[in-house]
Every structure is written in structure tokens, then in C-alpha cells.
Image 1 (tube, one colour):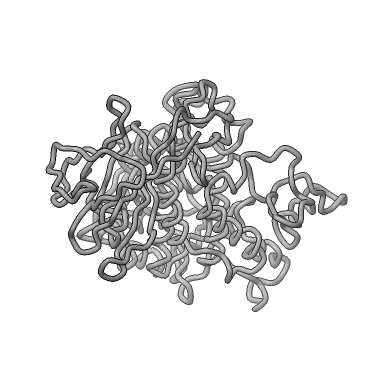
Image 2 (cartoon, one colour):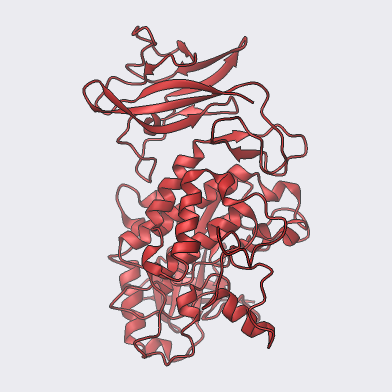
Length: 475
């Protein structure tokens, strides 16, 4: 090993440690800085430095398309993206990027020190090799899906596409419910820079896979874009919530070879394993299903893998996934089944359970706040639901006010919490200025409102303040 130095386009000297066998990807080889706080990644292709398009892409990615320089939300995006911080032009073309935080490397077990790529967690077989502490509970995977969809939404809003979203380029930390999108330097800017890669098998959109036989410049050939990102995003979310691939089932598409079977099964003839009418690719024991994830996500998966599987324009956007996941997050309830592998499930419908992972039911009726918004004076319409439990559930601005969304700029100060005390369910006020009881009396911070069936109360008298109507679901 020896210490080397490179120079960025803006004149900075960057040190790195040269090793004989550095980690390599499809396009770059990677070296750590002496203190391992950042990495430098050099392109394999010796012609890369002469590629004007590549230089223009890198300049655009670090400049006008860079969310980490946002004065309001830049620090937030630094947690969701491993965004490059410099372009190297000496000794050859490369990029400088932050090193992954320690949580994205296995901390225990036989794979200690290796990157936490998603396949370790989405494959039941591979999960079985991991220590329990590394696997995380199901709520953490849910949070990971929200963060991934939020990151992709931010890319797409800027007109960018990742082009290779996959379990390899989205690292996750299920023990903490965190994710980070990597391989940013190959982003696609539609109409400006062509994609470098087709994607990763299993995440490549069917229309891309089905046209790879055509010449690159053939107008019928489909290249990676935001539409193909939408397919990969849906695959990732399905894998992390249901621990299986949405298209890999028992159906045989070609007996000629495994390669042709895979090509057809993920491409031109791809069939959703949960297709409502075509059951030809459905495994015999398929549970839980998308129906167990609640109506919001069931609809999004249907649009992704039924209506939109071979019709890209019908796929839901990343912002729809983000909003659907956030709404469904408020329906999560802890499972008390002693052998439940997930520890959480989505409580939807008219009864409290059972948990689709283990069959256990919550003890006793479960309270749900039916949240309503005022569309005109005195007229309140259903707007959202919040399943109540005492496993650390808090009340936030996005529950209290109908016009607040828990995105990157949201105030995450807790305004209240729920507790069960002497057989009663309570909402304890911590910071709500105008919480009122069902009788209309002010409930100051430090006091509580008891949740009683049908006894509506105002969470806030501010504009867009919601009305909450307690409901209790029988077990």
C-alpha cells in the first residue's frame, strides 16, 4: 500500500491509499482516503477522460443538479445520497465521494465489514445467514422504502434518472431503518446525456430488456429513463416488504435455456406473481400478499406490475410511492405474536388483525383516529387514518394539519404521544396550541384527551387543522 494524490478540476489535492486489488464496479475502481472518510473512484476506460459528454454530465451532477447544496435541505439529502463532492482530472478521470457511514457495513456475524447490499435482506435464503441484530424488524424496512422513494422522487423532480436502481446501488441498514443511494455519477439527464448502463438483472424494465437486441441508435430501442426507474423502484419496494421478487415465479417461459427463460420472464413476457387474473406465475403458497399491505400500496403495486408492467406510462411515479407509503406507515401496528418474524403489520379494514406474517391478533379493541379535514365551514371529509398504539407512537404536524407532508423540509418536533393508562387510551398534549376536548374545552400542554368511540375533537383550530374521530376496531 502507498499513499498517492490526485487533483480535482477545481484545484484541490486529494489523497488516497493505493492498494494492489481495489474494489471494482462495472465502470470504476475505488480507493479510500488515508482516514477512510472519503473515496476516490477512477474510471476503467482510458477513453473516459476524452469523453466530452461524460465531463459535461459530471459537471452537471456536481453543479446545478446537486441536491446536497440546497441551503434548506442539503444536509437531509446528504443522508439519502452518496453524492460526489469533486471530479478528478489527475492522474486520470474520476470522482471523489463520501465514504459510506459505518451502519452500511455488517457489524457482526460472518460478513462483518462487507457492504449491506439489499439482496442480503430481501432473499429469505440469504437472510437466514444473518445475525438477528442485522435483520431489523418490518417497520424499519417500511421506513427504508419511504426513504428510497423520497430519494428517487428528488432525482425525478430535477429531471434526472438514476438508470441503475437496484439492490447493489441502494445500500440499506435494516437495523436502523436507513438507506443511501449510490453510483450517482452515472445519472441520466434526458435529452442531454445518454445512459452508461442498462441496469441490473432483476431490476431492468421489461421494455429495456426486450429491446436489447436492437442497435443502440435504433429508435425502437428503449433506454433507461425515469420510467424505467419507476419499475426498479417498485421492484425494490416489493422485495423489501414481501421478501420475494415480483416477477420470479414458477412459470417456465422457455425450455431452450435458463438464460432465455430469464430474459423472457423479466422482459417481453414478464408476469406479476400476484396477477389477479393470470395465475400462471403464482407460487403455490403466496403469503402475505399486496392485499395485506392496505389499499394504498395494493393499488400502487397493481399499477406497477399489472397495468404498467408492459405500459410504462401507466406506472406510478416516485412521489406517489412516497405518499402511499407515508399514509400506510400510519396504519402500522405492533404484533405481539411471540414468534412473529416481522414484529409489525398493516392494520386496515374493519377488524384488528390478524397479522399476515404469524396469524396473531392484537389483544382487545384497537383505537384508530379517523382524521378529517374541513373543506368548507362546518363540512368535514375523511382525509387519513392513524392506528393508535403505545409503542412510541407520536403525533406530528402532518397529522394535525391537512396541508403538511412529512417530506425533507418538515418540522419533526413531536406534538403529542399516545398512552394506555388504567384501561383508557389517551392523547397527551406536548406542544399543540389549540387542542380541544370533545366538549370544546382547551386541552393545554401536559394534559390529555381520552379517546372514546365517536367522541370527535379538534387537533388544532389553525387553518387546515384536522378533526379526529376515535374508532375502535374489534379483535
